[in-house]
Length: 271
Ligand SMILES: C[S@@+](CC[C@H](N)C(=O)[O-])C[C@H]1O[C@@H](n2cnc3c(N)ncnc32)[C@H](O)[C@@H]1O
Image (cartoon, rainbow, N blue to C red; front, side, top):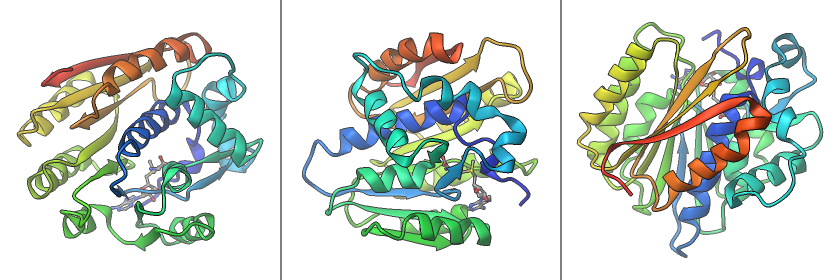
């Protein structure tokens, strides 16, 4: 477990993933009934963009720092995401559990799982002032199945692993397929890096074996040359109504400032 998200926090892929998360949470909040957010690989929750790790890669400079002050008429999820980021403070960046914690209502709850002990401790501190949240220092893959189906029977599961292990794509696919069997109506957001198009395609194929009849893929790729990851994707099982269209509009707003293209396509089902 060498991966530390502090090197990558706020990069172009984080922006796309976190705006998508906000879009899903805003949709879930349209009904009064409570829901659960399960973040299987939660990270530390709060990132210092002036810290040594962030400075070393400068990834946030080509990501959140290009849009932090974006104004004008923006899609709702993008506007909310930017408000949350700005409220976190200059040179700070909120990770997925902190974004979720800030958007939850009293009837909702967050389960944030993080395996690395130091990251889990920082996460517990970052979430200390929020109620309705639980931080588990545990293996996200093992723990997920135990948490399903949730008592609320409504919710979103974010699976955002480091993809360090050679067989991590296979483990993720197997875990999500098993989770979907236990909780077929849940919304699943599964992040993956695109280093090999063939690998990404076969991963999408494996997730289709879950039998999910509604599956949308959001991919973001950078136009500019540079070091590091060039593209990433998010597979969303049971996307909320209107989510795909919303992501297209968000992509249009991010296109120029991030110099990145966001593509949305249905792998199963449709609008
Ligand atoms: C990509 S980062 C998560 C970023 C976070 N979801 C966000 O968007 O802000 C992946 C995290 O997973 C943690 N991790 C690695 N293996 C894990 C496992 N088996 N179970 C839970 N967490 C794990 C790493 O320590 C790292 O903090």
